[in-house]
Image (cartoon, rainbow, N blue to C red):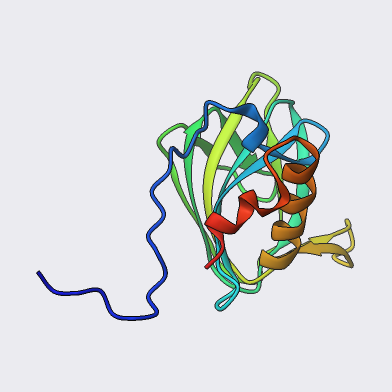
Length: 160
């Protein structure tokens, strides 16, 4: 057996959709994320996004490519004519502004996202209104897990 090189971080092998609802970190009303990997070296993060309401979730853009896989439900971008439903793979090119919307007939959507860099929130005119990155995600997790009994350091297992 070939030994693992020194300094290589441990693998992450966890149940993606958790049984414990406390693992879902609130992001906005009826919007949560479940961290799976938060890379502080490259700025990449992988998470599940769960939405339990119809309507606009966010208007945003990314400086790098984003990859998604819909696990449950469906969603769309107002700027495109496609709908991503369960089993769909989505590639988002860097720099494009899009408005994520969950349609009226969908009561729950869960999508896996692999994101590098930031998620930059913008208004209707394209002006930046906020952002998220690996570091803001880590802090949201620390605050949430610290308050719900899991402990602020619970998120450490996902940090690389």
